[in-house]
Length: 434
Image (cartoon, rainbow, N blue to C red; front, side, top):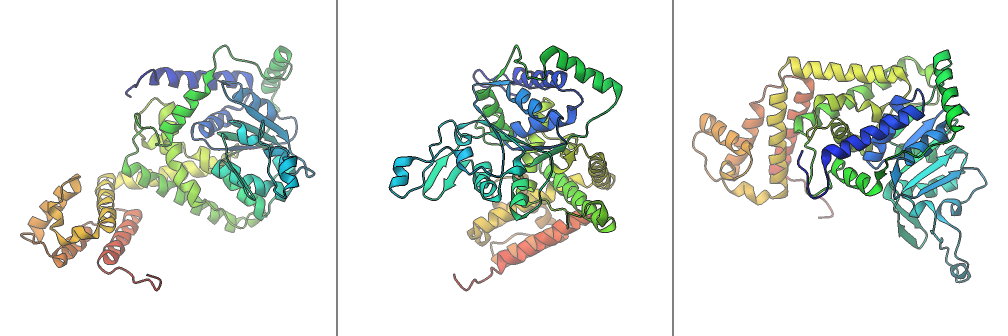
């Protein structure tokens, strides 16, 4: 990968790998959870840890945050008596005299880069609802007060899950979730005791820290917001990732119907469109940690960190099965080349929807991506010489998409969607409010 200015990519990757290794040496038997939380930091997401008491949840969060310098950390133990000012700062008395509720956000969660909320579900619903916007939109929005937040990531811990409409929304903000199941083996207990003797159950400062500015830069790269460095996500990898996640979601729901008593609190397993979209960032985070500037199928396999509860091995195995099933289907049918062509065609259809005036010109003559050349060659072989009529363009697009013989069920679904897109392109819906 290219480097720009003083940002040396290989050195930065080494810093993060060293940090992960350091935390693993300090926190015993939590390798997968540590990897997951670093992915949360790289993607600027939040992580939720569930376990019984005394499982070192707080120590893990504190040790991970200690790996960075130049960032403020807000910590709080949640309770039912707390009000939003615990998180957003006390009320400004002078403003209150004027009838306005304004929080003094100095040293609050709003002005901190990192946050640790212990026993988050002990907080009352009113406070949790107030936290939603800050967690998702990175802003304090209460009444007339609107304050942008510096918040990068929150790690929250809990001994239990409390299910309600509000907590369901909170859980959706914590894209990365894990469950600690303490190991009672003699070896693990011995390693934990040794660490306790060395450090007294407290986090330690590493000899080398990662500058918070470096984390910010890597996060911009991972989320596709950096102007100079990119991690490429091929179209077929997006298609593969969405197919795997959808297959996993359907399999989870199938199991819930077959074994409802295993999870009586769950009516269904739901992955929100927000989480689907954020899978792209997870793919790039995985590629980054592996030193690659392009996402591969190996990164798609790592999406289990986002879409399962780490620590529940049956979920991981189910996700791996979904990944292997879809990858085998697409690979056995040699479908990736077809997917690539159809997704490039989809981008072209989207461009025509954005600029419908292009339909009044020979679309095979439009300069740009390879799909135009493919269309042009196909048109010459099938329809003869192109003309500039809208009707000819309609026949060209409809004929081209029908020329694909779907190799898998997923590709068949994509072709049906594209046929509908073409129909809507030439027969736009008339809305009553237009």
